[in-house]
Image 1 (cartoon, rainbow, N blue to C red):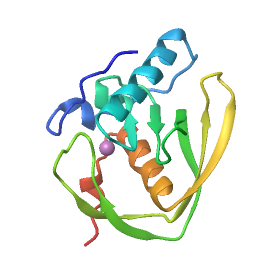
Image 2 (image 1 turned 135 degrees about the horizontal axis):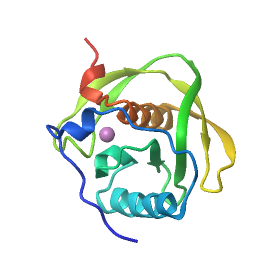
Image 3 (image 1 turned 120 degrees about the vertical axis):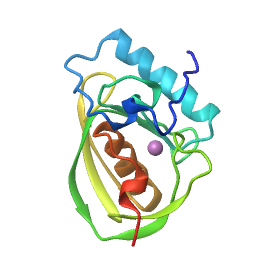
Length: 147
Ligand code: NI
């Protein structure tokens, strides 16, 4: 595993739309491993591939230590409710803001074996999933600040 450099706000890469993964290759598995290591080293609860300069739809989330969730081509398929909480981002260190997010989301994605799965999360997990999936479309939490 290798720790990757996290791109910071202002880098154009963070505003690009990422391409889906067509086949889960060894390269994608290495990316997942490296992203997990990078996220943990930075004390984050989520990281998206564009944040390490890779324009692919790949995300890792870990809101419960020791239980990482790897998502390839994640898509929000259902959401409900609303939450307004403080949010930050490893690409915008020292910046925090209150965002409007769904309280519950269900996401469909591929796992590292290329198998489809669904995950439903509430509160912090819902927020993290939405935040990271936003990154894949070039969106940052500062685009979703509560008025
Ligand atoms: Ni972020």
